[in-house]
Amino acid sequence: GVETQGPRRTGFGAVAYDSARGVLVVPGLFGGPDSGTWEWDGTTWKHIQTTPPVPRQTFALTYDPGRGVVVLAGGQGTHGGPYFDDVWTWNGARWDQLLTTGPRPPGRGGATLTSDPRNNRLLYFGGYNEALLNDLWALRGNVWTKLGPSAVDE
Figure 1 (cartoon, rainbow, N blue to C red):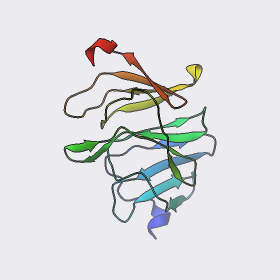
Figure 2 (tube, rainbow, N blue to C red):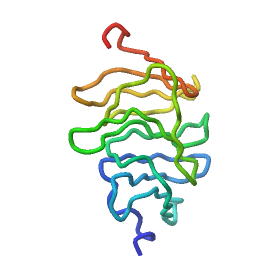
Figure 3 (cartoon, rainbow, N blue to C red):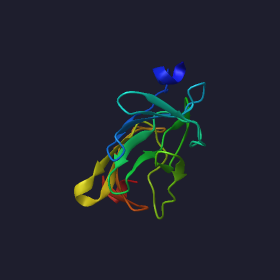
């Protein structure tokens, strides 16, 4: 069956390794028969049907050791947008939207999200919307902070 073979199509998505649970997390967020979230434990695929974030591709994804969850940021709805500026967490059973406060990165696709455990934060860099982006943001808790380029070039 499909579930023993894993997802056939994930769009222009990303994967993250959840080191606390020992699984590879593969969100299938662009619709179709493989829609949902897939996990690989090294032996078998598990297809988890749950309410995901709205369909998107080119999202950023990483494991956050501070929260113990996989974090998804941004993405692109279809060719040409819309570009999302939201953040979601995956705990192995469901997606929850992380409500952030203060200024936040503009919606984008193709960005990189990575953990900075030394400073207990995530770093979010680059991507594109109507233009290529070279800004760097930090997410600590539920607060975004712009780290660069300088805030005057927003």
